[in-house]
Length: 331
Image 1 (tube, rainbow, N blue to C red):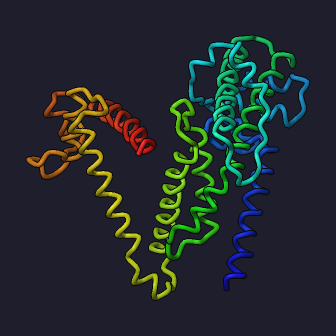
Image 2: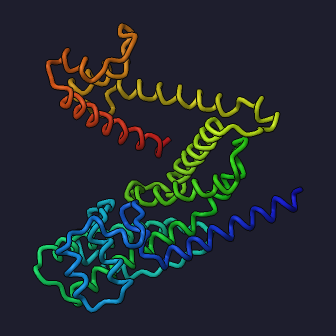
């Protein structure tokens, strides 16, 4: 049995590594955390499409350019980015990454700087390009070069940290969830973590990524249980009696609620008075309010429109999310 599991484990590892190698060659693994399919140019205008068609580029370069123009470009800002004399030696630094071998702290820091600086410059190049009436190949090549650099950096980060996913899969227990599904969801969580991580805070990426990977596992388990609920299948007796997942979910939910109450009471998110009142009424955070109020009901009490209450709520929740993520990383 152990031999069979070992073969299965090695097969998944090999598949993950091959997937990463394949993604490095594809133009549809884009910069903003959004995956675009080949030929998905619906977000560029006909005028832009004609400009791209007139360029003397290869079909692959035109496809990449279309995706750069269409998709959002996100980066984690850093004060160093405005100082070219500092960033030039950083970008010239060459770092090699081996599969499932964690990087040294200084190498990891440099890779994240390179990743986000390449995206920062990519955004600048795109803005300059879109202001021009005619495009030339000379103007396009720096854009494609920045794209290649950020793709390469992201790939190295994910490749070196893939061992986190495989290691954590073996430490968790989700009855009825396939090993490969956990690896897949954990890998996607690792990709998202690489897009959101701020190296300037002084923490190791692995600390941040582990949290994201665990969330990915939980997401995969929820999807699996929802599927089994919609499409009943013959489950093992052990799984039917095991309430470990439900107890874990309940514990996590209670901890999150307590954490939010603590943030609200101490106003760690720097909420305004109106934001605090809206959240308390919308989510029934006060003991004298047994049930949450609708947007319309909150608006009537505060003499504001339903849409205005929605905007205030979303802004307050964004503040809470930011402070919660900060506390999660530093925990």
